[in-house]
Image (cartoon, rainbow, N blue to C red; front, side):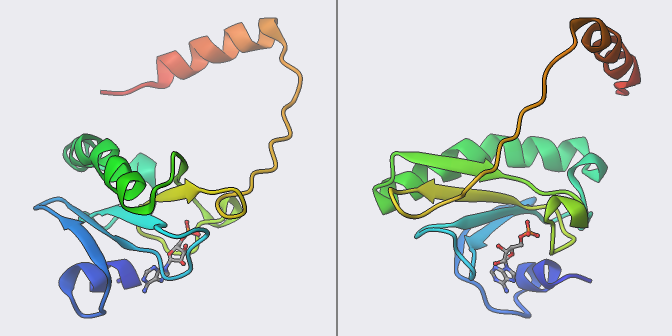
Amino acid sequence: MTIFSKIIKGEIPSHKVYEDDKVFAFLDIGPLSTGHTLVIPKEAVSTLDQLSDESAAAIGRVLPRLCRAVMKATGARDFNVLQNNGASAHQVVMHVHFHIIPKFENEGLGIGWKSKSFDHGAGADLAKKIAAAIVG
Ligand code: AMP
């Protein structure tokens, strides 16, 4: 069981901002900026690709609402939503979570965005391959 399952159960304290039957949200205790909030499904799976449609829909329904609330409470106008999957992608807690990170002038998420060149021929093949792999 991860620390986030214990937070949902109330076994570990948190600064809760939202809860319904499928979703829980609380302040990150290692914030990148004031108001950094974590939104998690109650379903205990490690990565987003494992999440049920029901939990995904429940998170999708409230995520924009929670973003609006964080922005209103902190006064931030800009923000990032970050969702890491797997250790090499910077995931530390192996329970799906979405970071809402307000962006201020000197606080927030820093991103190294090293884009590659794009090959349209290979891209066309890859798009078909991904489309064919979609299940459900
Ligand atoms: P990630 O690197 O995407 O797995 O992010 C995990 C996040 O969980 C980090 O930003 C941590 O600061 C945060 N975190 C870890 N333990 C707690 C906790 N007990 N309460 C609130 N946030 C936590």
